[in-house]
Length: 399
Image (cartoon, rainbow, N blue to C red):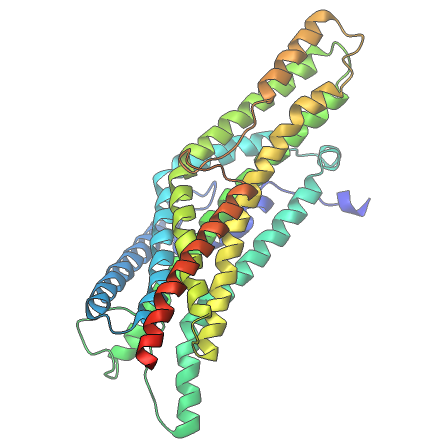
């Protein structure tokens, strides 16, 4: 009984991603647009966006210059995942901004269908859904924040340790970027360090907030599929009104799912392709004999990348499973002894629901656990090739 004492609000499912949206200046769901606060948030977003874009440009310039010299292969493979991470964050946050009105409409329609009484929330398992949402989102957020602040602050820790160990103050930056000035100079170093920390934090939040909102919407869609399944399974014979209500909800959820795919499908393709390369390069760095500090941060980067892709694939698979239960639930309902018209209508529902609802990466790949295994397989293939190319060169140097 204690479980039903407090109602679960719709905003509980999207609270975590919206907290991160606030940090980068993206308007929260239902927030007024004409206020001073809204204008300040827009300034924050576009300044964060411009800074991230600037970081991406100077990362590419550094990479091109370093690749032209062919001096440090390990440095190049360390820079490439960071570039990919920044580029991916850039694509994701633009997905949110370009389709902001559509996402608001999806959330509004899901809120209208959301169970709002304690009895309905208990019946449809809303509390369990909310518990899963909170555990997954908070855990993933903590992992990502640990990752980015270790990358951002590890050079500072290294400088402090070096100063107290041998009295030297070796200035280091978190990321490899090209600058047209000598950033070692007093004042320039502090500003450059803060600039890179801001860019790294924004990239992490761009990625994190978009992924969490994507997963939150899928979870709300799965809840609605569960509601349809429950109502079909427990509908009384010849209750055409209940059957029509189930059909309306089912159609709405399918429309919302298709709308979600049209919004995120391009970024999912970029995510899957980019993640295969990022996982490969990060794995290569972790096995290339780097320092203990670098090993720690790249292992954390690898774990975060694996978890991030798994999360998308897991929730994509969850949507497939949730939609797959509809025809079975209809068949388990009380249709025996019902009128032919009711049975015929129920049969149409079953036939329509045999087409599974799934998200795709621009139709190239279905977002599911099977896709996750393919991404890991591709990453391992790239990793094996990269190791085979690198080790002979190392052996030649040793000779």
